[in-house]
Length: 443
Ligand SMILES: CC(=O)N[C@H]1[C@@H](OP(=O)(O)OP(=O)(O)OC[C@H]2O[C@@H](n3ccc(=O)[nH]c3=O)[C@H](O)[C@@H]2O)O[C@H](CO)[C@@H](O)[C@@H]1O
Ligand SMILES: C=C(OP(=O)(O)O)C(=O)O
Image (cartoon, rainbow, N blue to C red; front, side, top):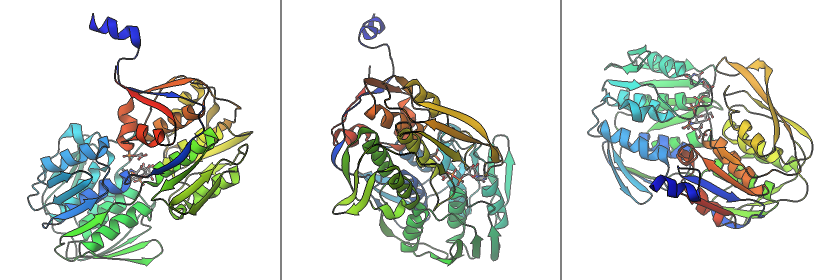
């Protein structure tokens, strides 16, 4: 009876976003803290016995909630006060991690580096995160073994055994893995070793975590543009750190302004952490500049097409490519997006096609950095997109369909919100502040 009643109002029985498109966005919004800096920062904060305080943590994100649960179960002390977290690892016990929690987030991998620091063995069931391709962890295993830790891998997960790291180590990644770089930092900062890591990731989120670690007493320097030198200092101490703003959410707003022909000021943001992306969008015709209060973005006429190729920072970010696709789906003409990092990152294109976009995903003549067959999205820009029922395939795929929906004619309903809400805690508030007609509906 209850179900039948609900069906009268909606045929969808899970929470969904309802967006009435076509309103040009206008106004000012402030960015929350960055998911991809907050998650490793919380793990980093647990490298200290003394309390480390983190501000501007996006505590509404599903991934932050899961990570905090996972860390607490393994012995971390984490106290939450609004968006501030107080963390300490003094009671860290390691052990076998909860498989369901570890399998929901990619950064459960970082608990290996954390447990290495506390000399506690750890069994990590297979990590999760967005389903966007073959997300390998061989470089994590390689790095920890190079540092001198005993590691075993099975079909069920990764086992770090109690072991003493080597004194002086130099290692090189064949690709600057984001999470792998963090694991090296975490395992090395408070050891008694000197570690040189060549071809390290240098994303702004890594720089933010390094600034937190340095505040905790770590000795980390860039030996050259892409090499980190880490001198273990034994113990880390109390510190206070504010997590950087989310540059991927800034990109989401820029793309939404583009498709809705609007204008906005994005508070606590700067184009300096989005150079490759902003360069592409300026070529497309958007006006984007740092100004009073943050990034100013304005639609300035029909969008032109721009081809994009993703690669490690400072090149165009793979997490931002779905937002670029949404923008190009409304531009004049054909553009090509080449994804070189993750082989399964175009699932959202089928969803955009349900809204009238014309995107074909084809094999390219290249391999992704994980060795898998690479793909291209060929996007034929359309005058208009139309509302439809679509799903959030993953965090950024979900954001891409939401962006397209904001500019589309008619109503869009987006389900599978758990994925979107792993990375966007306040999607509705963010876009309502810019005048969007958007609601989160719980049937
Ligand atoms: C929580 C978080 O911050 N996630 C980000 C992080 O993920 P993540 O840390 O997983 O990204 P990596 O840079 O490690 O992975 C990128 C590529 O390298 C490959 N690889 C990685 C590790 C490894 O041991 N072996 C290997 O081959 C992966 O399969 C993938 O194809 O960076 C990605 C790439 O910028 C982003 O999409 C994610 O949003
Ligand atoms: C891919 C992402 O996250 P994760 O690595 O946590 O799946 C993302 O933030 O877009």
